Each structure stands twice: as C-alpha cells, then as structure tokens.
Length: 300
Length: 300
Image (cartoon, rainbow over all chains, first blue to last red; front, side):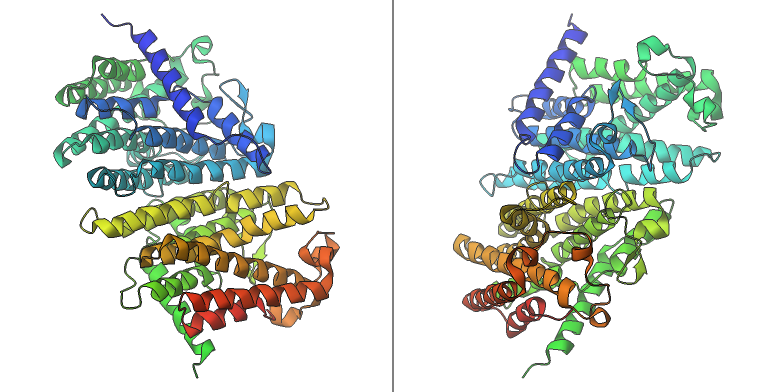
C-alpha cells in the first residue's frame, strides 16, 4: 500500500528542484524583476500541472528519463504563475494576498508585477524550447515541436487567456450554463489538458490516446472547479486557508448556483470516476489515479 | 535607380496582409480582446522588424519563397506590439495616445489592455510555431527551432524585457554610460537583432555570418536610438508627429545629454556606415542598404 501523502510531497520537492534549476538567478541589472519572478513561483502552490505531466509521460514511456519533460514541467509552472501574477493586479482582481503571502504587485509594485508576469510568460516559452535536441534526436524534436504548439494554444486566446477574458468581462453579470462551461473549460481545464497532453506527446502517445488524455484532463479540470465552487459554500476556512462565501457575496454565478449542492457533488463524483477510468486505460500509475480523486473529491 | 519610397510602401502593404492572415478574426466570446489585439497591431508603425527579417532572409536564400519566414514576420510584429501595449499602461508610461490614436488601454480599458498584451505575446509564439513542418522537412525544423530560441531570448528578461525593467526602475535618476548602453542594447537593439538573426537562421546562414548579422543589427539599433534622442532635441514637431523636448523636460539621461549633439551625430553616422558595410558583406539588397541609412540618419 503506497503512502500517497509522502509520494505527493516527494514529487513536489522534486519539481521545486527542477524549477530552481531552470529559473534564472536573481542578479545583475535586472535583479528586482528576477527576484519578483522567483518570489511569484516560490509562494505558489501544489505543482499539480508539472506533476500530472510527469505522471502521464511515465504512463507512455515507463522506462525513460524525465530529462525531455523537465523543461516543459518548469515552463508549465512558470506559465501558471504568470497568470496568477496578472490576475492579482489592481486592474484585475486586485488581490493583496495569495496563500497568506503578499501578491507580487503588493510586494514589488504594479509596474514590476506586470513586467515579472510578462517575463515569466516569455521565459516559459524559452524554457520549453530547451527540450529541443538541435537535430541530434529528430524524432524527439518533432514531439517537442508538437508539445510546444499545444502549450501555446492551450495557454492563449483560445485557451486560458480566452477564459480569463470572458470571466473579467462578465464580472457582476449573471451567467448562462454555456458561459459557465466556456469559462471553466478555458480558464481551468485548458492548462491541465496542456500538461497531460504534453506528457503524452513527449511519451509517444498515438493520436487516439492523446484524445483520451485530453478528455481525462477536461474531466479533472471540471470536477476540480465545481468542487472549488462547492467548497466556497460549504468549506472549512481553517482547512482551506481562505475565507469562504465570496461567490455568494459577489453574487457570482457558479455551477453550484445553477444546479444546487447535491447535483454538483454528484457531478464531481461522476467526472472524477470517469477520469479514473480513463487513467486506467492509459495504464496510469496508482499515484495518478489517487491524485485525481484527491484533487476532485477534496476538502481543501 | 530604384524608387525607395515606393518599395517601402509595397513591403509595408505586403506585411500588413501577412499580419491580417495570421491574426485571428474578432468574433466569438473573446471578441473584445480579439478586437483589442487587432486594433493594437493595426494602429502601429512602419513594420521595420518583419521587413528587415525578410530582407536578411532573401540575402541568404535569394531563390526561396518567404513562406517559412512569414509566421516569424507576423510573430515579431505581434511581439513588438504587445510591448507597446504594456508600456503604455497607467502603471508604466501612462500614455493615452500613440501615433495620434488612442492607446489600447485608453480605448478598451486597463484590464483588457493587460490581457490583449498577454494574448499578443502568447500568440506570437503560437504563430512562430506554425513554421514547423512536423518532421516533413527535418532541416527546416532544426532552423525553426533555433529561430524560436533566438526569438524567445531576445524578447525576454535577458533581452527586451530586461531593458524595459531597468528603464522603468531608473526613471528620474541620472544614468551612467554603461546603464544607457545596457538599456539601448536590450530595449531597442534586441528585437532588431532577433529579427535579422531569424531571417539569417531560416535562410541558412553559418554561425560566422550569424554573428555578423547580429553586429549589423546592433549597430542599426544603437544608431536608431541615438538619432531618436537627437530628434527629441532638434526635431521638427510637424515632421515627427509628436512633441519634442520631452527628454529635457523629464531630465532624462540620454546618449545626447552625455556626449553632446555633435559627437552623437557623428556616432550615428559611424554606426550607420558600419552597418551598411556589414550589409554589403552578406550581399544585402540595395533596398536593405538604403533602409539602414533611412532609419538611422533620419528626420522623423
């Protein structure tokens, strides 16, 4: 019986080492913004996206080293971080704290936060490009190019940014079921899809397997987001580490306000179970299967 | 004798068509920001960077179609545009007009301008990735990967963004010669270097030729920027289409304030002549040679 929490922490520590290796040192004339880039990445999160990328890669290439995936793992976390840095800006959500720490603009000023976000986005592409072998491994380079295309598309105006745009524009307005789904699919699911698809592409998945991975990732993203809405209504502030009830206070339309708590909980369980089934089809590790349940049917 | 102005306009119109073909249509749920992206690109400039990229490519591959360069040409102009959109933001230069038109944040709001800038930066990488053949032309794909690396590096924290960071941080402070050179080389030269180097890489230049192209581009960038400083002091507002004397008013250190008008003019002529000499060494077109002089020893 594996110890899920110990394995989770081990993987997070490994990803933090990968990130540290790819992030530039905070020195030289650009020191302030390099510090802001490192700070933004360091205060962040559970490293779920690179973790899932690595797990899916291992499902398809169980005997390979992670060296070709690592640039993309680091790139994905940098990309995710830039999106949080810009989301927190005064002109956007105007948040001063994230996970109990000062947000980047609160600590370094608005101008440096805009530039640190731009720099992280740009550097995420620079970092992903480090996976190219320069023609030494032609087959690998074809996969890296394909992975880079997925990375760009899922992050851009027809992916994550597109979801953010509609979310910002519709703030304060009631949303339809279609609009909710559009925002969730782009803002939340797109980067999870990209992460898992890139793992699959680099691991040598077929087109059919790639579609399956995309579907699995979308399920996880939707379940994760609906569970977020549920926890905002029913969660324990101490466990969550953030105040609850903000959606209700802001009269925000969510999946829960449209369908109610019971149907939403059932949908999370359905999506999560389907994702686990799909994971089994690609021979995903026991860890990835447990991770899916951990992320979707969760209390924080 | 060629008609330089007619050729210039012809090339600009061609680049505008390329841009129009690569920019997504302003429709769907993300319509507002897609409109803002198109607006930002449309109000802009002389299309110098893609123009120089194409000219350098032609120097190395005179009998080839421009199809492999076009994605990079469009990408470079999108990248340049995003940098202007974010520079104009209230937290940065807070400019309401650019070339007589409302800036993106003045027209679409600060939130949409941040997102339109992010979307243009992201889409520039997506667009450049369209040059990959997917393994059909392996030699081309190696060049495209290399070009993409140069694109990322010259745009990022050790390129353009790095220059912008130092420029923003040092606003209102006197600058040393080294600081001035650092800002000019990164903020102004880096994208010109990238443009011309990408043209050279895609055209099959050797490493030695690539270094020569980088040096030529740096000369052009420095001459262009010093001439900008000169024109701010001596230019004709009617010809420039913008107010002069802003550097003096803002007590801004420039190359001219450090070295005086006469030495600065001599330096522009020296850099420009050296760039033309380097252009001749790569068998650059007569048009490119004239363009260098036009850009550096200019009145507007």
